[in-house]
Amino acid sequence: MAVGKNVIFSAAVGKVCPSQEEAKIKSGETIKPGYLVTKDSNGEFIAHDTAGVGGDWFVADLDSIGQGDATTALTVGDTAQAFIPVPGDFYNVVVAASQNITQKGLALTSNGDGTLKLATTGTATPDVTLFLADEAVNTGGTAQLVRVRVASSSANKASA
Image (cartoon, rainbow, N blue to C red; front, side):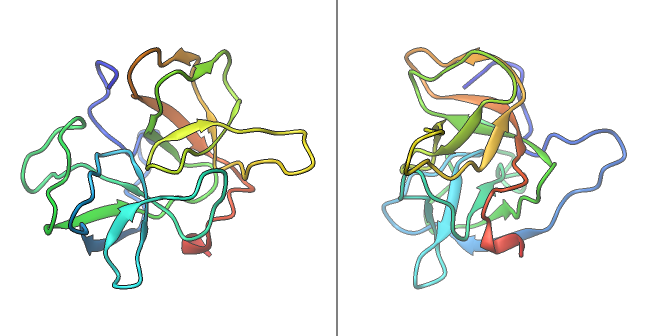
């Protein structure tokens, strides 16, 4: 994770906390703050597991009750909070290793494991753009928190 990022919701001064969902973390899941999550058929949070698509998705918050930081995995079985992103909001989300974000505004999509990756665009079957990068970063060998803006075409059914 990138040094210096200690929050997930990263709004301008005066912007209040967005709506959140609460659910238990499903057994066997490893979810960190800033992961893209969804709910399984039992209503438990799991890492968003389908690359390149949207659906009902949320951004996992840090465990503020347990005083966890932005690098501490959420505890399986505990109730966790996740933000319901709306277009234009800013977040620090986990982007997968080996992603070279060369400029602000590049499209990001689900990597299928809770992290994000650069979206494939301009093809016959483009990825669904969920976020736009708000900083240029090369994640190198490890996943990192990257500041992003929720895309206006994010296809998030949870925020509808």
